[in-house]
Image 1 (cartoon, helix red, strand yellow):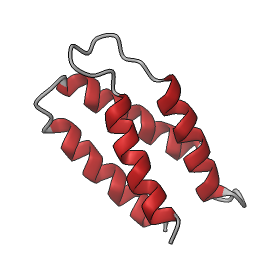
Image 2 (tube, rainbow, N blue to C red; image 1 turned 90 degrees about the vertical axis):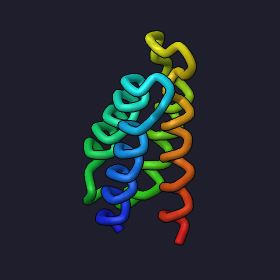
Image 3 (cartoon, rainbow, N blue to C red; image 1 turned 90 degrees about the horizontal axis):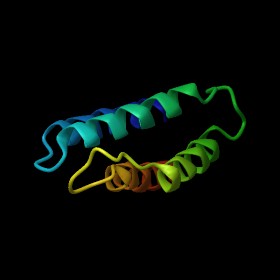
Length: 89
């Protein structure tokens, strides 16, 4: 399952690099989300639910003031949605 999580992170990093709007904001948001996910101990009994919980909180509080069209919340939300879909199975 961890392999799928890292695959999703890589897919979203590529999407962020290809973003037409506020590319640097999108890249930074996904990079910070990756760091957050990597900071969660894999040995945790509640690893999957902890990822969802922490990433949800992170998204709610995330605000990159450098964005002209986005704050970065959208790309984090897209990642979160994909992770929820994968982790629920």
